[in-house]
Picture 1 (cartoon, one colour):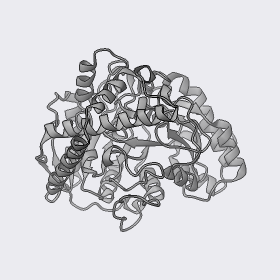
Picture 2 (cartoon, rainbow, N blue to C red):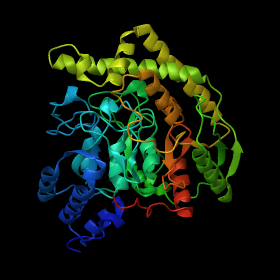
Picture 3 (cartoon, rainbow, N blue to C red):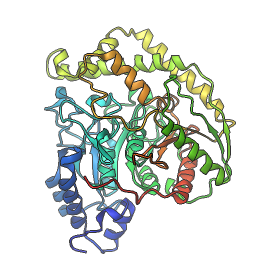
Length: 476
């Protein structure tokens, strides 16, 4: 197996088992990943910063004996610092920034034995549902190069879908794990608030709406990775209750007869494409066939208040990021530093008072409590993941001068994912459906707070009943 031609047949745990058993060397696995990247990345633009030699050196020096020892890995180029590596966050304002320490989650990735050999493309500051930054250019969907890979973890999703890696770091503040997972036909779980550390640089992102994890091809890789990253770091302001057993133990465990609520009603009232409704209905039928109790139901909460409060928090946070970075450069931020949509959001942030920010956070927390009561009667909520199939490259252009249309397009594309970020509950995109154009259409399952275990049990059951891991995009 010296040339390791079968590299992309394995998920992360499968590759780690080969390395552990001596069937293939970690160096051979890394070279297979690099060869795959060099073959396909020019077409999809998933990797924006290469770190091939650094990864080779890490393998030569010896890897920690973790559950993913020798597995090639990619970090998202967004607020995940690796010592000595550039961290641009998809923005020219950060073009010269090099991290001088590891984020805690990156340190845990290292201890797990993962071999990071590059960073994946992200929209500027993670602010868009597609990945088309001015700094690096668009990431393209391996299933159709004219379509988006989603955002903000679009580079991560494209890299996994194209077979560069079986698992890639991703983050999610408003759907940024689940949206690209849906676009690229992959599994993407957003963990509960406080499950994964945000330190040492911040205690939380976007008032607790943002979190990090990964996009994977298999459910078991997602569960095993969460086992190695979960838990508070030193000084964490809060954390999710620890699970009763490892998340990997939930994969294959009987989920029991779940009460599955189903709703195709988008919170913002946007029209939902027939393919996206069909994907949800198909998933609902599968759940019923598996013995679950399926019924139409949706949580009752103030939907317009969600949009207003999340805009307030994200706009104020964006302004703070620009001011902090520009301040480190010894000046004030300027419009030419960033893309037009980013600057417009920061200008909104300038109008947010301290009391308005506090009121917005209180609103979001209140909605979280309302929605939590819904999960007293339901175990999971099934919805479409997106309101449209993967859209064309260029529709969501952060450099557009027509910002009103841009905002409308954002809302009409990704109408469903934001609520679970507001509540802090775990949610996942599951790839059970492809449309007649052979484009993947994910569905979303939202769980109750801190209950990733139920989602992993259900996801593994769905994966066994309707396998997707061997489904590959056409050659490009």
